[in-house]
Length: 207
Image (cartoon, rainbow, N blue to C red; front, side, top):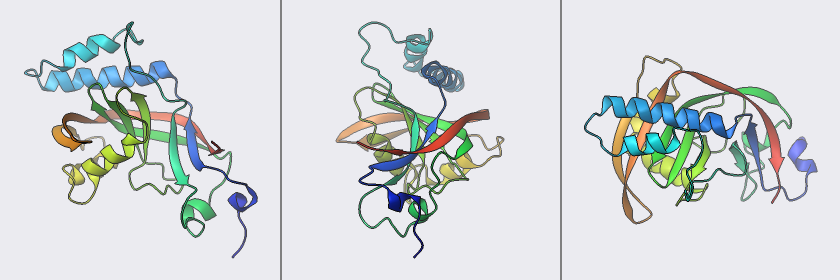
């Protein structure tokens, strides 16, 4: 088998797509989405508090919300038998591309995850995503949340196809409850009604 770029590297942790999005843009996406969800669910008294929380595009004092180190899509974890996968063999470093963010997942006081679907790069993860904000959860918990929602038999399995579809008329606005990490959590899932696109670049990550 012909050697590829990743064969030349020593002990990398994972590959990914670094997205050129600023923290203030993440908060704008979140605030806009929560506002639209709230407008469609007038009886929901929980969301207005979070809208006010993020309204000034910063965190209030004593807030435990925080951003991850960067905003990226994990393409491939370097563990197990990965050398024969397309995500390994066809990886190109420093490849510039546009990333369309399809929607988001919001779990109050836990995590905010952006739903993406990059078509130019092979991604090992079945449900590509970007961890955008964390509070009580860790960035890796985005994987668990996406799987519980979208995997075969998941509560929003069918809706996932609508979310990643480029047809913006396929609207998705769901509020569901899930058992996550031993607790019952309310989960908000929203597909953006406009095209949200940012530039990105592939890179190799080391721990």
